[in-house]
Image (cartoon, rainbow, N blue to C red; front, side, top):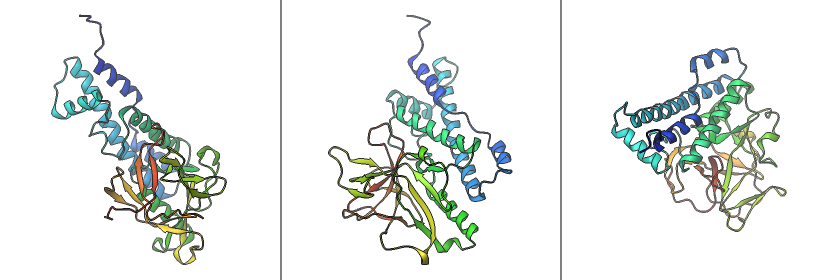
Length: 299
């Protein structure tokens, strides 16, 4: 037996550790943002997201480091670590890693997606508020959308209870083409539609392309408006849900009505927000609009 041979599990854990971002210094971030002009509600969102991701990154780094020690005979196996090792052997996301946000991705794509999430928040922390927000990066998107309403309410001197959203659909899905934030509200990317496809030139939904269940939606402008001033001519209010699978099991319900400016509805009866793998298997986590009758129940 080759004594210099590297244990496959230890090698896998080492590679995963290299892919895992470092835990942020939450205190340093708060001190930095005291002098930043970011709206207070969005600062709160950032602090909460940093805390959640720090917890996740800490768990990942701790479990991987301990498993490496186990392969070297320097630590004992616990039931929790044994479960993690089994999942890693099956290229699945360990259960204790997957509790921060819902995902259906296998381990490799999940790690890549996590790195993209960390990069999104790093860019916010280092540079400035995003011109376009990758909505699925949020572990609690309804909290983020509420914060956007709070910012608008304070800026316009109105009660947040009088505000809701209109969501005009842009003509592009490329977030890099957005160089400036809207005057009010936010641009959001990472939205996909299931059971239909968006006609970019025409600006409407049409039937799915052959063999394509999920397709990308354009960037959407989540625009706070007072309910009494809301335009109702060409928009349709549809409830949104956040779930962890396509089975209708609900984990959180978004607290606001969102409206899409759609000229063709193709019999939409329900729209839900779900984290699922992208259409090609390597896309980021996506917010999915379901078409067809919904059989789940609201919670």
